[in-house]
Amino acid sequence: MLMPQVVLMAASDIIDRGQNMAGRPRREDEPRQGAAASLLNGLSVLEAFSIGKPVLGVTEIAQTVNLHKSTVSRILTGLTNAGYVERDEETGRFRLGLGLIGLSGPLLAELDVRRAAHADLEELMATTGETSALAVWNGAEAIVVEEIPSPHQVKHTAAIGTRYNQYGSSSVRLFLALLPFEKAEQLLAAGRITHTADSGPVGDYRQHLATIKDQGYAVNDGYTSSEEVGISAVVRDYRGEAVGCIMLSAPRSRTGPDRISAHLQSVLAAAGSVSARLGHRPTVREPAGS
Image (cartoon, rainbow, N blue to C red; front, side, top):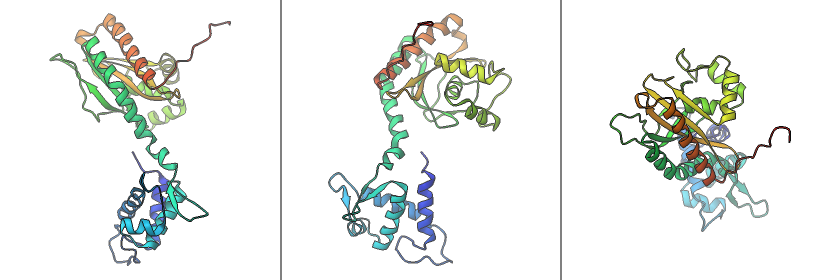
């Protein structure tokens, strides 16, 4: 997870004011390693807070992290501007800010969905006999964060941490479909999402992705490899936000059209179960004309 730009700007501001780890002015001929030092100092300041000591003054923090008070004060100013600490105007003491929740939110969501998905991934693999996995989206790639491999000798697997950016990938097309179309189009135009003539039925990107978004799943029937079938279905949390997708990968040699249809129902069931664990309640569509 990347640090928000505002934190880097705050760190740069601290550095540019001429302070290093010892709190003395940095000489112009010193190696410019202050950026890493300042970031580590900032993390040390944040780690000084605890459940037992949720509110601290500058002197207490300086003693805890073994930094000069002036250095700690400047770091706290940057962290306050970034929203990661809050200053009590009456006492002048500090506490952790709500900005930290926003910073850790993507990681917490990923950990929650991974924990919630494990049992369903095992059941999906047992039901289908094929590799099941969970992927999340990092803004331009689908990343595998959990996998239960097929027991078959011939199977398709991907190590945890594997990244996909091919349009033909079922997970990539599913995540693209959930983005505003203009954003998906930008990723395609910039080449961050790769596409070849064998990447599947694209024709009109907008219509194709709209269909996937509406149905909540995508199928890769040999689009990324003539030997592989992939099926992905979206996982949503209590807010209705897409937080990942359940994937199934299988060799095409044992996955004909009928088997794809059966596997799709199993993948959808698994995605629905994980979503329910995360508190999602599907919206009931009203009958046409009601």
